[in-house]
Length: 175
Length: 184
Image (cartoon, rainbow over all chains, first blue to last red; front, side, top):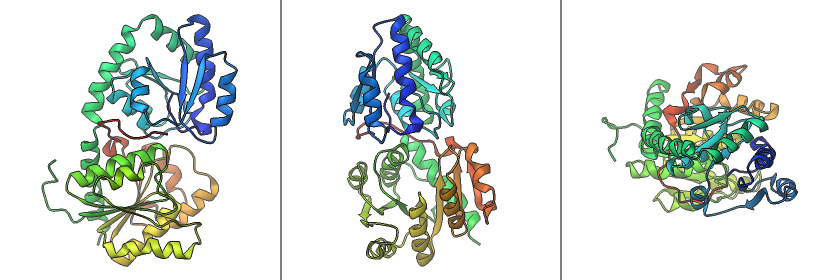
């Protein structure tokens, strides 16, 4: 999980899900990278998981962290269009995210990743176990996610569309 | 990178926000602004209270950058530093955050520029934030609400609600090509 650690990111859900998943498959471990107002509290909670979850704090090697992970998770209870999912997809990494805000516009459920209900620890834990037992599934998600990112979420397209919308609104807004 | 087919009325784009510290919106601007520059626009960035982790990425991309180092919303010296950016003569001012809106409004009014503010959040706005945004919205040419979820709550009670428009997220989709920056 990579996020600015604010309350709405619900890192506690991630920790709990990893602990539950690890009861079924002890290969599963969780890592949290990021800083924010929740960092101290989350670190304290993770320290009680007997090594299941490790908090890495602020990192400057996020791409390497993403590449090292088997799954990128986002457990937010509110999001707009989370960059971290697009970044993960750009690196061909599979994602599991909560179905909030615009995440479903990024992640095609069952095709480029899995979506779970916000706050549903069991659903996330089940996905983690399923992915660990059938790694070909997240592998396929990663490849499909990369294709989706390259088709819809490039920086060239973002800037071009931004300029186009600005021009359109400018025309309408000026008398 | 090809530009739009017709000459644009908005070639000089000034982006105003509180800072570019960690966060998705800040990260998005750190990618968007250099890409707009690469596509041929003249791009400026004014941060008001601090630079932030992503500021150097933008500065390194030949974007004219400045930080007003405002200590508070009522820091007049800082405000004077911020308003000095009007000499840059933007065609359009894009703002984010309440302080960004206020300073951006003055800059846009004093230069005749279009002022657009963006609201990406899918969360209900806090009451005080809403109140300030409501007051601010009467000053702004357009408010773009990115994603349908927040549009209704932003329109409700705003004096110029017709100028609060929904822009589909994908129309301004966050883009990403290469992971190079510090994150979170």
